Structure formats: structure tokens, C-alpha cells
Amino acid sequence: MGRFGMAWSAFWAILRSPEWAERWRSMARGAAAPAPGEESPAAVGEGQPVTAAAGGGGNLPADAVYTLALFQREGRLVDFLQEQIDSYADAQVGAAARQIHEGCRRVLHDVFTVAPVRSEDEGSRIEIETDFDPRALRVTGRTGDDPPRSGVLRHRGWRVTAVSFPRRHGALDPSIICPAEVEV
Image 1 (cartoon, helix red, strand yellow):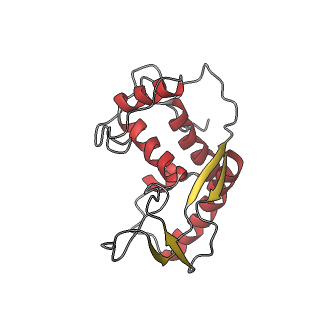
Image 2: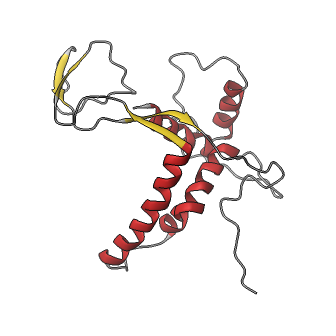
């Protein structure tokens, strides 16, 4: 799994688990990273809900919620994912997806610098080294052979090389993804 995939897994683990959120906060302050062999971020707190305390924020990780808020603000992603779309025609879903794609793509390009994990063209044959990083390269198909081996690159993968969050107002409730709207 590339860095972006790892970040995405960490995002959901942090959102679900107060314990993992605290571990991440501790690492972000410069404390030692978890030792090799400890549970991965995606496994920690699996299925445990994270709740916000009354009056603002609670133990929700602000950066994770802010990322979701950006995708909601620009692409209405949360609205789309919360909607039951089974009753809509494919053309209606496609039209909505085009608008959502445009807004979310804008956030991706404005906030994250993303680069391919592998430089080779998809469909090309590549060598898989003995000491490959399983977070950066997922081997599928007949995987019983001992590395090194070769295979066809089906997807180049993605990694985040930089993140540039817009400035936030510190006094606002970090648990709010999107405010409620009231027309008067």
C-alpha cells in the first residue's frame, strides 16, 4: 500500500479509535513511532466508534474531520455517500458523480501532491525484488513463488508527497463537516 493508501487507512483508524488518535497525536509531537510488529493503524480500534463530546469536537481528530469537510465543501461527497442511490437512474447518478468528481478532484489537487508509486507504464512487466515493501506493492494472482519474481503492473499506485491544508479558524468546532442550512 502506498503512502496515500496508508494515510487513508490511518484516517479511518484515527476517526474510529480514540486510542489510535492518541497514538497518532503522540507521534506527531515527536514521540517514538510504534515498534515493528505492533498492530497497524488500520487494525487498531477496528469497529470502535469515535464520538464527539457535547459542545464541540470531543476526541475527534481535527485533521481527519477537516479533510472530510474539504471534500464535502467542494464536492458534496458526504451528501452523495449518505444518499440511497438505488432508486435513481444510472444517468442521474452519472450526472451527480460528474459534479462530485470535479469538486473532489479540485480538493485532491489543491491539498495533496500525489505521485505514482511505480514509474513504469501499466501493462508493462516488472521485476519484484526479494525485499519489496508490501505497503507499496501488492502482489496478486499466483503468489506462491519465492521472490524475486516478475509480473504485469496492473496499477501504478499512488503516494502522497506533500499535504497543504488551508488555514483553519481555531475557535470553530472541529467536528463539524458541514453546517446545517436554514433558509429564512
